[in-house]
Image (cartoon, rainbow, N blue to C red; front, side, top):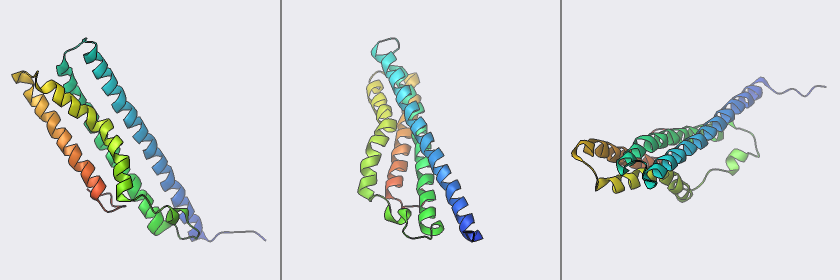
Length: 170
């Protein structure tokens, strides 16, 4: 006698595999984004500290690290939404790992987000502070643009922390 699964169960497991694969891919992309942000920060900071370039070059950091941070947050929202769909609608079997790991509390997410936010927003804020006193008239638009990016990222990160779990919308 063969052990055959009902068709609907096979379809659910195939969908689960596809969604888990997407979660893994997005997690890998998040790690890449962190690496890019840290590399950009290191290269620009190193060039400024060794006095190879002026401190105005620091204004490159908000234009690089903040967009990378927005991409990281987008992946985080999608991963959370995928996990919520798996847990709440797709996975019907018990015992369920998905049910067991209902997810971290808002405080745990906040504690996790602090270092992540510092990777992306920290260098941009430091760059704005350091370069502020040495700006010439022609560089104020760059500084203001960087400050605007930091403010938008801070608002988006706060929205990420305050949203309902599993909701990919802002």
